[in-house]
Length: 379
Image (cartoon, rainbow, N blue to C red; front, side, top):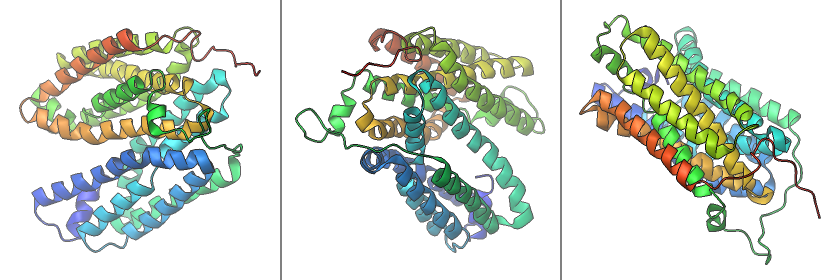
């Protein structure tokens, strides 16, 4: 990601506007296709097992990454990213694997741990890529990236053990449809919540450096300040992923989500009217903590109503909602920022308040809380 515009220039794209267009389309196509195919791959995972599907995804990523090192045209890279999106799917599958592998009282903790890894990967990856690119060259960096997928493939193959699966069936013996899954208690609400939280969470990236310049920071201070704030948001988001399991031991998902989202909205409001370094840092830290807590709690709430037989398919829907939010967020924030950069943060505050109200009014309370619920007895 850090050097993708440079790679397009190396491939013969010279105009700045064309480079920006190719970069945006290439980065956006993969999560967009992954969002559409996630439930379908989840359905296959429910039938044949998650491990096989994750192995399939990793093998394809190794091949695609190596191929990216040998492209000669801009559209080649775009097509490979599209192919990467089609063969993706390890995101929802690994979440499902973690939830199914953990004891009931540890589900939120397991989901939060995987989400922490998913959050820290994109945080550290660009740094590693930025260091590698000048050392080994732009093309060889893709080959080095494929090595990470090789390591992941080895770990999954030899360390993960998966129980046998049964195809999802309704009581009359017919296969459970996608519509039946969407009808689960709170499920559509959880999808909306995950979509909205990701939409807000990823809206800061495209405009944060511009906002810092607008409120008075000099050009030489903007990069370091933006880097610090991005790191704070990522780190506290990861802490929020872990905090969720602790809160769910005492409170229901409805309470945890509603109050976390409201607190995040209040912190974002403080961020919007501040210009001091410590205030910006502290308020954004609270925003990251609250959004991370809410997202993990939402997944835990969804997990609580999902039958074992359609677990991967349902997690595919949840992750699809997240990916759509990730794909749309930079586009929408860019459109809003064209009129007013500060309006992006104001829109985020309004969105969080609306989500908190909807959760408080609509989400069905489950008692006892997800983390402390005793296992159901058979028979």
